[in-house]
Amino acid sequence: MNENRWDALVIGAGAGGLFAAARLSHLGYRTLVVERLEVVGGRASTRDIDGFKVNNGAIVIETGGLTEETFHEVGAKFDVRAAEPPILYRIGDKDVDVTGGGWGFLLSKLTRQGAKLVSGIGAARNDSGLPEDELSTADWVAKYTKNESVHGIFRNMCGSVFAVGSEELPARVFLTYFTRKSAFKKFGFCPEGTIGIWQALAEVVEKNGGAVWLSSEVQQLHLTDGRITGATVVRGGETVDISCGFAVSDVGPFATVELVGSQNLPADYVAKVDAANRPCSMITVNFASRRKLLKAPGMLSFAKTRRLCYVANFTETCPEMAPEGWHLYAGTSVPKPAVGDFDENAETELLLDDLRAEIDGFTDARILSIAVTRDGWPPQRAVAGFDLPHDTPIANLWNVGDAVKEYANGGTTACAETAKIVVDKIRAVHSPMA
Image (cartoon, rainbow, N blue to C red; front, side, top):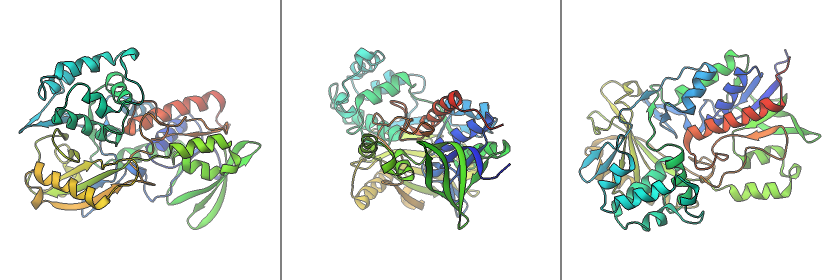
């Protein structure tokens, strides 16, 4: 069979792209994945720093949900070790496990107004109890309490799940997520670093007769009679033309428009994509210590920090992620503002100040890297609640990933959801080549 003729072209080997590619190849579609970087995983990958497996974006993988179901469905190895409990909350001088008690238990530890807040959250389980779109999460919480610790918990939850502050996330999105999508989810870490699970999906693609071209880049999508017929790819310094029956893009709608050419798309669609191009931002300090600095086996979140949302403890469950005798951690913040420009140096210093204040021994820890994800390389390409549709004006071109999430979803699980939806649409209109 001609190497350059494929059923499916998947642009980008990030979470959404690989979820889609694994599903497509499992269903018999001859699938080509083209990735600009030299590794899979995109903004949820891993790199080695002196023997430490340092994640460059998404760090936790949900267990027991759609992500794990996808791996089982396509026959990929799901090597994720669940942290028990997955998250603790630092309230005062105690790290509290709220897994069993949920919102009621958590808020009762913070404020006497906890019952009112729980009632407001409960009301949101019905559409009539959801606030209007314009109300931010911070303003919704302020209706019930001025307690700084409560506001801190909500702010850091917004940052941890959606990569924005509570002032920027609509309350309707937050409440929908935590009442309909399941609050306090279980998750874990991959002992190879997050890249390990994406490598497992890439192996599925290749096992099923597909290919993953790394260090390669789609330069242009070919359009004939209003349909995608192929692409020009730069691979190994050479230009290659490939043909395909359809294309799935995981590089974001804005970049996809550039690949198609804005002149080939309706002006109102191009304008809509431009308006929705509002990426979020995060700052992460990856650090290590020979002394154990954290009791939480998964993540620790906070009620009273200026920027620090959480600290992840990788080596409690995955000691392979660090050289013997070392403990590996990541502390992450959402800057102010998380959408738009901000003072990178000042925001990084605020995160470091929080880590010094909250993590005993941090001042003696080894800082491996400080990663600022923003602009063209963001933690989320769209603020939740403002995502674009998966479909495009071109009948055989779809978007997947974190700019086309379903309403009120976030993280890699949201990418898995977009992939499932798009592949189901493809199955309805395209059959694999004989």
